[in-house]
Each structure stands twice: as structure tokens, then as C-alpha cells.
Image 1 (cartoon, rainbow, N blue to C red):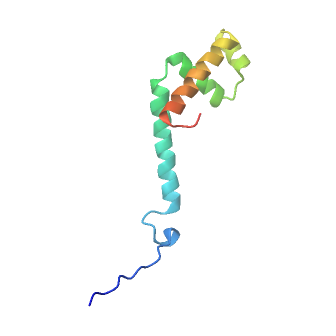
Image 2 (cartoon, helix red, strand yellow):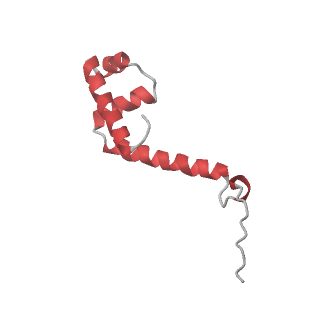
Image 3 (cartoon, rainbow, N blue to C red):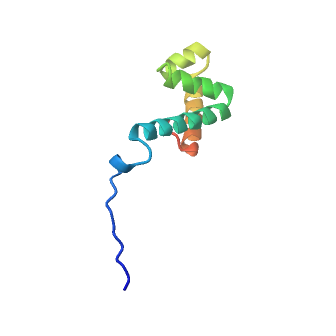
Length: 92
């Protein structure tokens, strides 16, 4: 006679081999690595404009004035930067 398999419920919160906080930290580190890789691959001017927009929270007009370029040029570089982020699967 064959024994029946016993199934035990698995509680991810309690029995997980990795704490939820550690999982979040690992995911954040992966995202940072992805951003670094995408940023390094961008042309210098595109990277600079993207970072001015995202980190300094400057408007396109402010970026254009600081760099001495047109608004359309800023829009173009931001479009390129966002496309690279999308292609790499990182939020822009």
C-alpha cells in the first residue's frame, strides 16, 4: 500500500528564506545597477540633460537656458533618454 503525500501550507512571510526587507533591498540594488548601466550607455549630453531633469527637477526651459540650447533640443535628448530607459526595462 502506498502512503499519501502530506501537503503543508507555505507561509511566505514566515517561512521565506529571505526577509522581505532584504528582498526589497536586493531589488533596489538591481534597479540601481540597471540605471547605472543605462546612464553610462547614453551620450554625454543626453545623460546630462536627463539627470538635470530627473535629479535637479529642472524644467526643459531651465535646462535649455543653462546649456544654451533650444527647447526642442532638450525635448529630443529627453526622448532619447526615456527610450533607452524603456528598452532596458527601467522606469524613467
